[in-house]
Each structure stands twice: as structure tokens, then as C-alpha cells.
Image 1 (cartoon, rainbow, N blue to C red):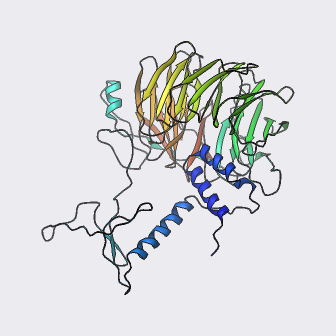
Image 2 (image 1 turned 90 degrees about the vertical axis):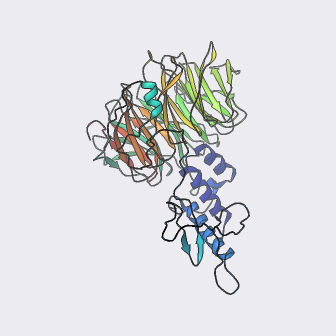
Image 3 (image 1 turned 30 degrees about the vertical axis):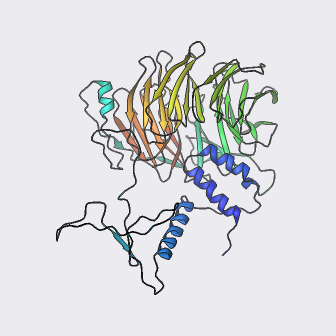
Length: 501
């Protein structure tokens, strides 16, 4: 048996990615030099690290409770991966014929009596009549939402999506998808196989492959970000090894921007589609002029990793990082024009309101904050029990409503003008890492590690449709014409129309 550190590192890296800790996985991959491993990594099944740990724990369990004569020692104390194990025997006096309480019936393994938790705990906000079922065709009752709505609390049952179109071509988990604004039938995807793809849904069996070749044959290249310009004429793609490329809608490579060999975490176009901002793992932000392919400026933006950037207009953008601050920058100004502080942990996401008045942020501290250039902190929304991974605004400039996705398995809808939470969607059973509003703002799609995509009504909070995928959902995007694209860890992309299927 050979145990290599590179193999262990790869399993840890895969665990981080499968668990949704994308930024942590980038940092770990970079610092462990895993992307420079000369040995091609095998196609490891999801959850491999957990299975290895479980089997090792079972072996330690048996080894600890095996007597010298080969008999098993009776013990009912839980066996944990961490901490010293102390054997004990739990006894309970019950009348003859009485059954043990549900969930505490002991199971035996080789003579050693083990007592395990009946089921995994769900960490979320307290709700009344919480339904622990994993069936996604049920809209979970929500007392808090009833109070905010003030209505009768009637619920609709969400119907399962019966048919979805599956796009095949990628050979590794698909992390990203983006519909082209100018051509509603054109979809771009990015995956861990070192390629992005452009699909024309009129001919979905064929796709144009956008390759990001490694500097050598053994370097791993994950696509970390993709973005169309608002005009829908150009697609920008970024990779873990620092490659930045610009493509046409036909998949023709227009530019290869200078490679810095530092992982790119995020990229965004300005409104006109003339400038491209890229956020790097080393805390810097580069501004690129796509008319000539030259770097326009470099900002030493954050003391830690830059986690997100978002444009306010054609010259001003905001950035957030692992240093717990938000900074607002202007083209050619080396110093930030505004700094927002108040979060207590990494800030995963920043998004400007469609009207430009507010800036929303999501953090690992579990809060969603709303800022303005004139008033600083406008709202401090607290309610999630775990990290908030993403926020998005309702696509209407006359409203100030946003949705947040959290690792506590819930999605919350917040109203800035009312300074309150108006909806809590809690049908998912695992972390929610992606969401998208429909173009008309009437519906919200949410995706989770539980392999489910849920489609909700913003008006009454009901669950309209649900889709069960074949693996973890990494991204959901809503096309202008109504279709939803779903990026999956299985290397597939699912496309369906929730209002027709």
C-alpha cells in the first residue's frame, strides 16, 4: 500500500469543491501546488474522502473494542473521528416488552454495540410544523413568512419537472453557466476539464469547445469564471492558472490577455463592454482594455484574496475580499473612493442594485448588508444560521428587493425599503450555493448540494416546480425567454422550461 501526499491533497481538494468551499479549494490547490502535479489524477467519485474516513473510523472502532482473546468489548459510547474515546455502557431500565425510543435502537457490528444518531441534524432557523421530508414537491410551511405576509398561509404543491434536456460534452464537473444576452438560445458553460463551451440550443448535440491549454501537458486547468458582455457579443473566460481569454459568440478566440500565473477568482464586464475587471487570489485586481487587449491598471485591492467584483457603471466598480472589507474603485484612481467595513468574516459576494443606489454584500458571518455611497450602512440583515454565499437583486430598478443563498439550506428575500425579511424558502436540505431571478422578476430559481433545483413564486412564496438532478448543483441561470440552465457536478448541463415542463 502506497500513501502519497499528492493523493491525499487531491482528495482534500475534491472535498472542498464538492462541499461548495470554492475559494478555499482555489487557495488549497495553489498552495499545495496540486495543479503542477505531474501525475494525471484519476476520475475520483464524489465523496471519496468521506468514504475513506468512514472506513478508517470503522476499522479504528473495531480495533479499539477488540479484546486479546478475539471477543468484542461492549460499548455504547459514540466513536468520533476527533477526541479521545472513552468506553462506557449505557443501561436503561424498561418494562419487559417496551421498545426503545425511536432513533436509539442499537445496531450491532461484530459484537460491539454501537449507538448512532438517527439522522443528520439540520441547522436552520426555528420554524413551526417543519417538514423533514426530502421530497421537493412539497412547499415547506413557514410561520415567519406567514407573519410577514399576513395572509391565510395557503400553500401550493410544487410539481416535479418531468423532462429536462441534458447537454453532454464536458468530462469534469461543470461549475458555471451563462446565457448570452444578445442571443437567448446561446449558452456558455465552464468546467473543471479546462474547457468552456458555447451551446446553441437550436442544435444542442453540438457545442463549440473553448480550450484553455495548460502550460504543460500535466497542469490542471479549472475554469473559474465566465461572463458575457451586456451586448452579448463577447464572452470572457478565466482559469485557475491565470489565463484570461475573450471569444466571439461563434467561439472564435479574439484575444488572449497577458497571463499572470495567479488564479483568477472572478471577472466582470463594465456596462459598455469595453473594460474587464479580474479579481486574483493574491489580492489584486486588474483592469483590461478589450479594444487593444492591454492591461489598463492594476489595483492592490485587498490584503487577502479578492472574492468578487461588480461594476456600478462604466468607470466605477466594487470589490470584496477575505480581509472583511468592501472597496469602491474608479478607473485610473489607485486609491479606493469608498471603503465599507462591518462584516466579521470573508465577504463572498457584492452586487450593485439595478438602479445603482445600493450595494449588497454577503458574508461568511451569516449576514447580508446593504450600503450606499451617501449613507454607508443602510440595512444589516441577520437571519441566516450559517455562511451566506450569494446575493442577487430583483431585476427591477423601482424596487429594492434582494435574495440571499446560505449554507444553512435556506434562501431569504429581503426588502430594503421595509428593512425586513419578506420570504424564507427552506425546502432544500443542504447548502444553497446558487440562485437566479427570472427576467421579469416574478420567479426565483434556487440550486443546492441536495441535487435539487426549486422554482418559487415571488408573489405568494409558493413552490411551483422542482427538478432532481443526478449530482450536486453548482450553478443555475435563467434565460430571458424562460429556460433554466443547471451546471452539475456530474459533468452534465440540464436545461428545462419550468413554466412548460
